[in-house]
Every structure is written in C-alpha cells, then in structure tokens.
Length: 517
Image (tube, rainbow, N blue to C red; front, side, top):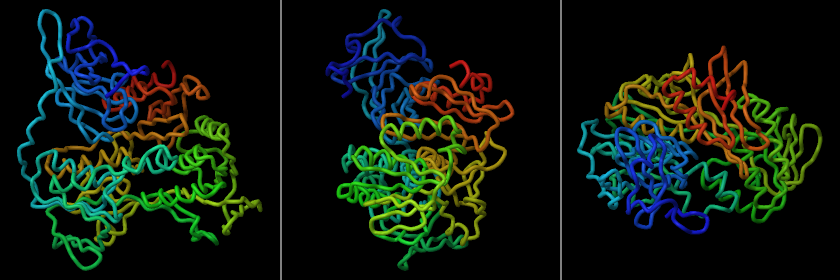
C-alpha cells in the first residue's frame, strides 16, 4: 500500500469518481481506491487505472513517463502496459494490478480490481531450451519463455548454489545493512517449480556439442537442447599481488561474496577498497554507512573520466569525501598482509577487510571452445543469435550490433542483461526482429543516484545543465554534434525522456539535453 508521509492515502478517492476533465493526456493522476494507491491515466487511446507503485523497488509511477500505452518508472526505468499491468521491460518482473472502470456523465470511476488474465495460449517453439547462466539474463530469458506461452522444457543452469539473486543489491543496501536477506532472491524455489523451469543450482556446463545439440555438465550428465542461450556473464578480474589470497581479501560478484564482506565488516573497523569502479565505490559507500574507515586505492587521476567525464567524476569523489572516504589515486596495491595494504608509493594502510573491484571480463571460454565467433565477447546478430543456428547469447558476455554505434558493443549493466535475456527468449519464439533497447544503468552512492542512458564509448564534447553539487543536473555526451548518451543526477523524469528520445531517434529532442533542460 502506498501512503503519504502522514499515513493517509494520496489524492482523490477514485472509487467515487473524478471528472474526466481532471485528466490530462499522458499525465498520471494519483489517487486511491479500495485501500490502495491507484493511477488514472488518459493515454494510448483510452483511460486506464493501475497500481501506483513499481513492482521492482516501489518507485512512484505517478512521477514516471507515459509513452503510448505504457508507463515507465522514474527510478530504474521499468515499463508497464497500461492496459494489462504486465511488465514490458525489466528490471520489474511482476505486473502491477489493474482496475475496471466506469465512464458515465463526464466522470470516470474505479469499480474494483480486474481479474487476473488467463495464461497465454501455447506457442510453437523448439522442443527444449537450455539456458547456461542463472544471472540477470538467464533468469529473464526463462521467465519470458513461460510468460510468452512456451510449453516445452526449460532448463536453467546456474553455477551458484542459490536461486537467481538481485545482484545490484549486493553492493548497495544489503551490504550497507539496510536490506534484509529475503530481498536478495529474485524468486523463490516454488516460482520455478510452479512454472516448470528446471533450475539446476550449483551446476556448471563443461562443454557444448553443437552437432549433437547437447551440453555436458561437469560431473558427467548431459542435457539436450532445441535452442541454447548462453548467459554466462562476466568473471571478476582477480588481484595478483602477494597476499591477494588471504581470507580477508574479497571480490564481490555473488551473494556468498556479499555475505562474506558483511561478516568481515561486522568484525572490522578499517577497510581498503581496491579499484574505483562503480561496484568499488558502491562498496565504499556501503561500508561507510556501516561506520568503517574506508580507503579507496585506484590508478586513475580522475574518477570515471573515461565513462562519465571529469565533471561527474569530480562530483562523485567529492560526494564520497564528504562522507569520510579517503582516496589514494594514481596508486596501485603491491602487497597485502593480514593487517596492512602496501601501495606503490610506499604507504601502508591498515586493513581488517580488503574489497577488490578492478573490473570484469566476459565469460566466453565455453563459446570459444565450441567454435562460436568470439570478439571481446560472444558475437551475436540483431536477433541475439550467435554464429551457430539455434544458439543465442545475452547479458554481459554478449556483443551485439547497437543502432547508436558503428560497431558491436558489450555492456556490463544489470538492466541491459535482463532486457537481453527477455529479448533472447522472444527471439527463440520468433517474436523479435531486432534487439534495439537503449542501454541504461544506475549507480547509487549514499543518497545520490546517477542514471545513464545511451552508449558513449568516446565523445568530443559534454554539455552540463544544472548543478551537480546540488544533485540537480543533466550531462549530455556528444560526438560530431550527435548525442550519444545522457546522464542525470536528481532528474529522473529527464532520464526517462532521454531514453524515449533515443528510442524514437529524435535528434532534435536529444540536442536539448544538457543545454536547456
């Protein structure tokens, strides 16, 4: 239930009705009905009523963007169908409720919750689908196959011993001690059982036989497939210095990694974070929120200069410094002992805990050994199909032809991976002509969030509008006069508008970002 700050339900009681004249095209009206917050939306050729909270993290859909027959969440860009409440795009996986309406005498009234729609009719497809990798992309692919009506066998093979987890939370609220354990699984075991998704946890694929259409699991068993999705993700780069294997030195990729960091943080007082990556700085913020002394060691001179530019990098550094993080830039780690980290400049930092975030590499060994085309990732076409018929790839390991770039790109972002998994499932069923989703990611640091849409590997100009220090800014990244990406701080609606402008290839609208907005 969504309420206002004083506990009252928001807006008018929609079960009593409101004048149609109160509704403006594309502008949600927030009200309530039957004890729940409800949106009324005039758009897409009709009037619709649906739940007001995003099913991902509870984002306020009333502050989102209506495009066609969909509404987008301002927090993490989930998208819902106004007519059915179905999640059109991750990161939301569950629908929002919808409501029946009555329109009489110039008024519209919410009658009550709409009955759940019947399951989709069965659709034709391969005899079976095997998905290698149970992360963001693999889980989304499995769910999409069932949601689209595929009735064949679906096997989801994951190396971790748990159900798929909400990986972004591992470096954010969960590590900071603000999210309970039950928030971490994406789904419970019963979800997969009820949908006949054969989830194999703690299992690894050792090889792929393209001719026989089988995958061999480590341990000796094999699985036949009519279609195969490689969602193998990426592996963290390991620190290779003396002492890197000590028990208080941890990377962060899995839920077990996060729990290990939590256990060390509960006992320790001083932490060193190696690497000023997004995950490294999110870990730094979470450890500061737990009250640890935190030092960050990184070789660069300016944070995020290559990805976000010097201005945003400076903002992020200043934000962390205001929260007490100490930076050691243009330095590397040369050795680690049980109680200290030695830097290339000779300084020694005391450390009860060392968190390593120095990047990841796409996991392509399986694909390479099978003879699939690999070039800095698993090469796929616009339908996410690899160089072998019936074999698809999605997520961090896949390199795809992006409409906004002259070459294939590979993106290591959670939402992109989920959307690619969804697209791969649809592609297998013949329901995808081209994967065209605009890359999106967010990174949270304390109470500030950076949202980024588009893809700018390089740029010749940045345009900043607003005030980063005040957490109210838009930054546009441009090359040759063309807008490649837009980053925002404190401007959620602008981020959604930029995403929509990229989707419709609206150069004029994109040109305004960072200048007049």
